[in-house]
Length: 335
Image (cartoon, rainbow, N blue to C red; front, side, top):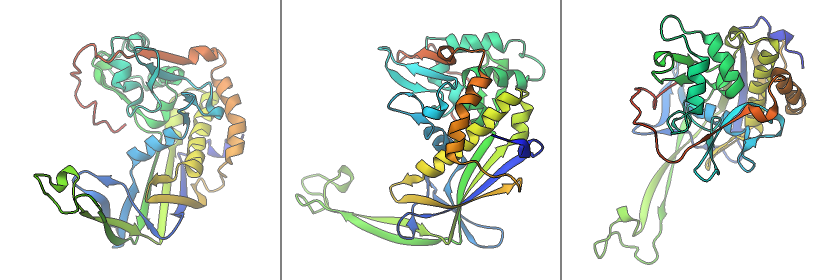
């Protein structure tokens, strides 16, 4: 696989035109106390955020993990990952599925401190002065490669005073333009007690016929945007083998999402109808089969000095944290 076209490009920008699998309506993501994120675009057109950057990061990760085998999907087997097991040794979670990756409380806050101890040892000497981002990237490459693409914020005070942070190298979102609301609704029928209330029971408790409203949207143009920060990937200073692996991994995530992850919600099932590379102009997005063929070799090349069995770090979570978490900002981090 040849990435020469990308060697001097600062960004790889991809735009994908989407459409509903059936009909014209779709349901966007909703936000607490806000609902759908609709807004006026610069030219006055009514715009809609269908899927946020935070949600897209989760989806790009999920399509690469096989929940049945508790491992990467076939083409990605051998990538470093941190797994968490419960007190019985059963799979609980992992750094791919956790919202904050290595910074997950199930990884850093349990009584099993092996990951925290490892980070303290390998990232020592940065309590004062500038943070060595390249050193952080080199450590994460060996333990949680996925975090180099989706970002991480290690807020533990024991780790460089809580200043170890990598922004997202790959980001994505979905927007719809010139949207129109499609109002509908229905009734939850109760054939036993159709009257609302009765014998002290109310609709809040689920009894009675309960009407509800529903807002969906229609749009002539729905677009998924993907941005791979190539300059940031090169800035990690990890060498050509690791850089090519990270680029191929990012492209594979995008391909997998477009082919298997576009059923965003029950009423938001989309198809990709056109894929376009906006920058650089002469780069062609590799097909899924080509990426699947190349990735095992890229993984083995980047980690040739680390046996496959040593690329998985296992942490035990027994259901209790070693102490109350005092670091601020850990639960609202935008990597």
